[in-house]
Image (cartoon, rainbow, N blue to C red; front, side, top):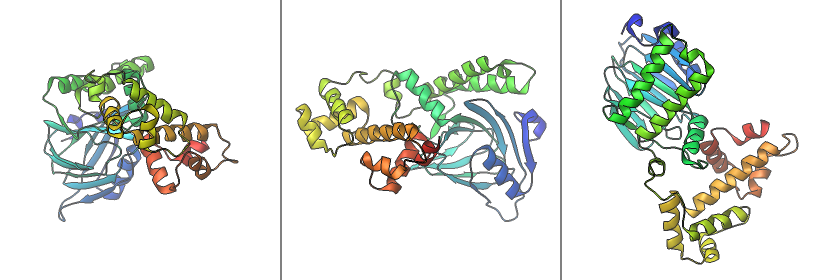
Length: 326
């Protein structure tokens, strides 16, 4: 697709036939990744256009030939990748789809991402800051989001909800491309970004969809609430599900089913989330010269540094040492 016909042409980041330059520039815009041309005789003709805002961004990316892209975990951001032509094979975690102009891909930050973009497969990409999207979801739910958001990988662009979301994307794109000044005004941009995030969360299925649409009771039954209080009051102590169940006077299976039904989690997963929150609060309040991540984590029951660091990064989008330094 010629540059003058492609979206966001007035926001060109680069245009190159050099694969190393393309990998470096796309990595700067998104994240480090591996990039490989899949056909020996093929020639790269890559271009990136980008209009980043505050919590979101719009990008146009075309490699001009078939490539394989392997970024691994995205970690700190979400993407919605919309093919404008052709197809792409997308694998994220255990899900696989063939993406097309009717089926966008929505890889989640904590799933290993592996992609093969076909020849003639330019894509319009909508970028979302992970912490901002999870915070926005929390404001819609009226409670903190403790577990990462996991979207279904395929987004059917023909549904009414998806078409409404695309209308918001198109509005922001046209404002970025033209002489309009909506996206140059921070207050207006903030409102547009909030609308973009809200409609994505309403249109695309994810692990909080039932709670967001009111399909599950918002208020947990007394036994579950008491178990939450036990966990939050004794998070630094060794706890088993049997001990928690005994404290609230219910059986283990009943307690596990209550957590699954009303909180979409398990008692031990909830305990881990509470402990991670306590670690984060302590790290933020600590002197980096006097405290260590290992000491703080061990006080809250995390005795395996590698597993702890992975869980912490999945929960908060940064390493515990980065939190301590901040």
